[in-house]
Length: 287
Image (cartoon, rainbow, N blue to C red; front, side, top):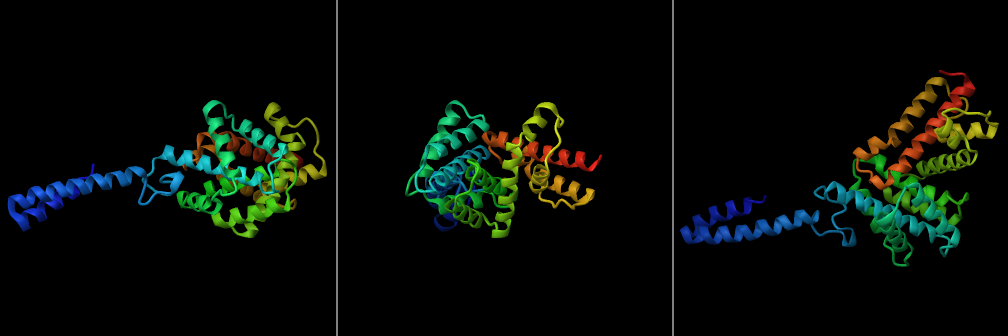
């Protein structure tokens, strides 16, 4: 409740105009408090167009989550348009990602609308990314999740077009990541895609073990997915695994504001990391 306008208005009104001034100051202070309350309710001074108070600390958690989700899917739509036009393959890729998020009913309809917004010629990409970065200030893991979501969308068809790569550079830079950091994430995502295609992640999820020996390339992908070299020691391997799990753990991301619609993607990522780590441990004979 805003009351300071009334208090100060009444005080200075009485000093300047006695009882009449007190009433006038109280009235004006009430108007000031009411206007100030509306500003905070909207989530900040000025707002952000269609995204409301996306960057404001006063915006509710649910509102911030909804806007993060909307922005993430809209930028995915923009990514799909990177090659000039949205093909049937890109639409299938978007639908597949929505399936992986377990989106149905209203949440899927909202995602489809956001995806279409991103495909528009006048989609405000840099403005949207600036709001995402502002909203996630101090929460680097969420920014990383946002970037990795776009990398997944670009890689979902198994290849990375030069125009998609250029757009990823724009996205990474706008979110505060360097070219080196983006390249590292690109290599890791490419390895994750191949690891997934090899069936090891699905096999691990279903059986909790590996029924077949990995090839040299598949083992190399597991190392790449964790961000370590094949010569890494047991201690280095464990440290890299814990770092990746700490950055991607669904519960930690949820506590920092990850939308519930995106939780399945976070769980999927940790399952990949777990499968890769266990595969390497088994091959190295580590406990």
